[in-house]
Length: 287
Image (cartoon, rainbow, N blue to C red):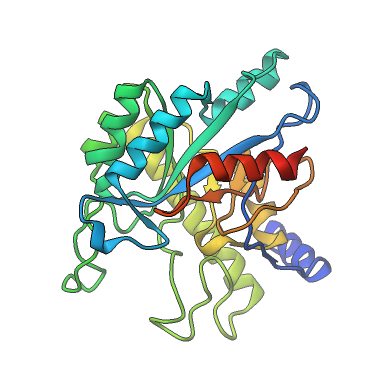
């Protein structure tokens, strides 16, 4: 283990280049899928019935329902990330209009609203879970209210339905320097943290949460969503060595990305965005 950590540190020092990608976009699956076939990835967070609480990470239930109806009407096929791997393994093309729907954080509104809508429409989505907040309505102090998150029983129900896949959004690395200035944002290093301590911390959190989800739900955890869309070469290498096949970022805008499964861009969907416009932009920039 110590030799492995030393290798990670050397890698980080050789390739210092934080991927602060504030963009969205697509998954480029690569061969043997159809050459040049890109897959748009949509990103949602919380859904609400209260129109006055809308923001960049909260959309109304009605808006989400309209979005899903649009995808059905336009002939899109929703995919799990595992569908891409299976198509590659079998050497077959994906549907002509594939799309991936994702949700970050594990809010209970995903269970209450998104899950039934997806199930009704015959669609599917992927939820990226934060570990410490599973089933909670308060922050780590046990006092400060947070948006409620669904629990393990609800997670298992969704996964076993075949409508929802559950993947990794860190156990306890979704932190902001707004709360504790010495913290790194997301998976970034703490202030004055040694590279060995940083490597150990990210590796421990990653393996802990991967194993916990797999034990509780019985699925295969192989997709990692970076908090705040911040990644670096060290974290990417650790993910690859830990059995991950994809990682995704967050943000706004559209930019082309090389043929890779890692640091994939997503399109953040807000209340003001129409999927027609977002997907037209996607088509424009990927053609």
